[in-house]
Structures are given as structure tokens and as C-alpha cells.
Length: 246
Length: 246
DNA sequence: AGACCAAATATGGTCAGACCATACATCCTG
DNA sequence: CAGGATGTATGGTCTGACCATATTTGGTCT
Image (cartoon, rainbow over all chains, first blue to last red; front, side, top):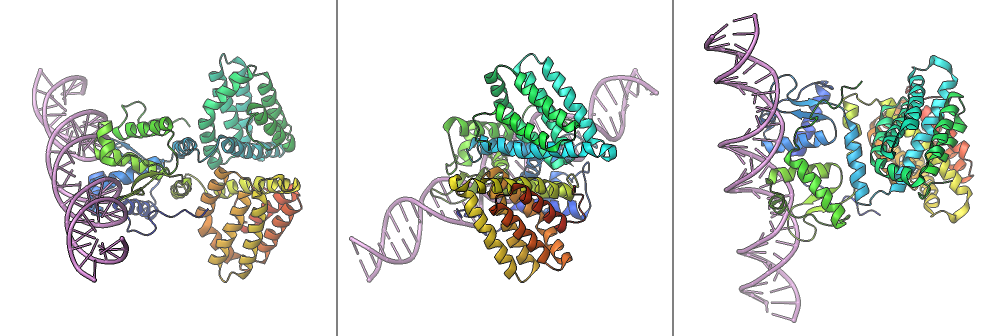
């Protein structure tokens, strides 16, 4: 089990890794934040004493991680700008490792279950304590209701799944945790294709909609246990072949 | 809220993105898996009709996502080899977005709570159903006990936290879900520094160890509710200033 | 035959320079 | 003052060269 760390155990750092470290230092030291610009590639290369290609590799890494976005041209929006889009990185990560069979579909679905169960339970609990909450939960349940209506009106599985994703994303957002929402979004992005298959296989979306209404009602009623149970039942119905517990 | 997707909305794909897509296609089409090698950079460049620098940027992205590892030299282990190490990607992702204040420490701790609570509850439930389980749960509780003993013997906060991480990782592994474990590992990697601070601030590790023993016992007793509650109490003690619910 | 050492070679790592594409900035003209 | 032509900063890409590393190959000595 411990065959890890076989590659590049020590080895002196590559130029682009040094660049990466320096940029991260600079972000922390200068208190840079979303919207701020990094120096141009040529300027960075000169400042750090490396070739421009090494700078570009470092920027590519940061772009992959959703931390910078590059834009050619001139003006205030050009160059490498700090952003914060962890979503696509998470999605790419999941999709690729799924493709390598290093993560199974069951595990993805299972992780989704964990997050969604707890998010539903929390949403129910916070509905209980009235509107002291930041209203996040309130608008979330409203969006869930909208999504249910949209699913009723959907004319094909693809459209249905789009609104289904919106429903479950709203559920995750009730947690008020951006990190959890980002993970949830990545999970759903990767599952989109399989969700469409599942809807086609089921043929009828009535059962799924019953589940959705049950989840929504449990949250509004402030019944955490029922909400969690409804989520579990829903996923078991949508993915009957996965090795979900219970 | 919808200022997203402002950058590169259409634009023709960059060369390295094309390379990325082709490599991913090839992985799927040829059924490549962990351990297989990709063609050399020069060869890929020629095959795909792009410059070597574009190939290198694509490989850098894949390396960032933990999908390939490159090694210079000659022989079966040289070149770009497919791997599956989502861990460092998740850690880098979290650390950088935390640095940009796009994710808060509270959210990281809160996500950890969600995962760990459910993992503990499941571990307890599977302990109940005897040894029909794949023994994952069994060895996990054993490793938890070892970690508790090691924490008792720890001589400084850094050492204590190392074993604390081992304890909580073992807990996550009881879920049998590699994806969850990878996320948990990233969360703990990022939290390491703050965990040491927390231990120093508390001064005494007795309370934390009481919590650990309570969690361990609840799992062995098969009491899912008690296990989840013990996890929540433990995190509330370790991070009293975070906005954890309850 | 075997052991050891030296050269060849394949592979990634890095740099320099050139040129293209893009999009704003600037300036000139009517 | 409006509008178009030109300038320029910025990322995107390619080529070619050279370095660093590690295995393979082959020769030489014992």
C-alpha cells in the first residue's frame, strides 16, 4: 500500500515549481486577491531569472487550479488575473480519475449521498430556527420548489436532469458552505451523463418527483431525520445498481 | 451573481487544450490505466501537429491534476506515466483558494465535520453487522486505537497532530470510499498548521484524547448516533472559534 | 564467463528568439 | 469632436538548441 512517493522523492525543484512558489508567496505577502493582476509573463521571467516557458508552465498550473485566468490583448482585463473558480478543477479531477478507474462511480454517488444527506438535515434544522438564519436556507428552499416545477414541465430527460441538478445544488447551498457546494457541483457535472441514463432507464419520473417533494417538505417542516432519509431513498431509486449502503 | 464565464467564452481552443483532449480520448479509447506510459513529448508533438511546448503545457496540467508523473532518463520508468494521485491536487486547490480568501477556514472545518460525522456513523453501523464487511472497518478501528496510543506518547504538538491526522484518516477510511478519503486527506493537510495552533492553545490534550476514545468506543459499540455526536463535540472543542453549527 | 567501466542514447528540463493574434491606447485627420 | 489608422502590450505558439538524468549497450580486463 505504500508504493507512493516513488517519483521525485528529492530532486531539485523544477524551474516552474520555483515560479509557482514565488507567485504564491507574493499573493500572501502583498495580500493579492481576486481581481488583481499578475505581472506579464516576460516581466515575471526576468524578475525570477527563468525562461518564459517556465513561467507559462506555472501559470498553466494556476489556471488549472482555477486561481488565474489569462487574457491576451491590452488594457485592465488583459494579462493573468487572479480569480477563484475551483469548480472546473474539481470537475476535471473527478472526470480524469474516473476515466482511469482510480475512482468508481459508486464512490462518486456515495460521496454525493454523504454531502446531500447532511445538507438536507441541516437545512431542515435551520428552517426550524426561523429566519435568524442568513436567509440562505430560505431562498434555497424557494429555488428547490422552482426546480421541481421546472422538472414537471421538462419535455425530455436532458432537460429534466438540468433542473434536477439545480434542485440538488440548491439543496447543497442550504448548507451555506461554498466549499461543499463546489464539490457538489463537480460531482453532479461528472454524474450528468449517468443521470440522464438513469432517467431514461426509469422511464417515468414520477417517483423521482415524489422524492423531491418529500425532501422539500421535510426541510420546510424542519424534520432533519426525514429529510436525510428522503435523500437516501431518492438516490437509491435513481441508482439502484450502485453499492449504496441501505 | 452571474459574472462567471466572462473569460474565454468562445474563442478557439488553445493548442495545449487540444492536446489535453486528445490525450484524454486516447486514455479512454485505448483503455489506458495506471502504470501505462504516454508517448514521449517530441513524439506526441509530431503526432498531434503542435509544438513541444504545447505538449508540455498539457502534460503539466495532467501532472497538476495527479494523472501523470514525468521522469527523465531512459527505461521502463522514464517518460510520462499515468498515475492516480488526486491528493496533492486537492491540497493545492484548497490551499490556494484559502489564500485568496475565496474559501474560509470555517468552511473547511465545516466540510470536515460533515464527512467525518457520516463516516463515523457508518463505521459504527458496519461494526454492527459483524465481519460481513470487507474488513476495512475492522482494520480501521485497529488503526484508530494505535493512533490514540501514539498521541498519548507524543512529546510535542507537531507530533501529536501527526497522529491525530492518522486517527481521523483511519476514521474516513472506514467509509471504504477512496474519494472521501482523498478529500479528507486534503482537508487535513491544509488544516495541519491550524491544528497545531489549536493544540498549543488548548495546552492540555486530555480533552481531545477523551473525545478520541469516545469516538472509538461508539464505533466499536455500533452506536452510530453517539459516534456522530462525539465527532461534532470533538471538532467544537478543537476549533471553538469557528462558526460550527451546534 | 563474469564483472566492471565507458560510450551511446532516450527522455524530460530549460532557455532564447522569433513571429502571430488580440485588443486596448494613442494619434492623426477630416 | 468623431472616427479611423497606427502603435503597443499581452498572451499563444513554434523552432531549435543545449543541459541533466538514467538506462542501455558494448567493450575490456581479469
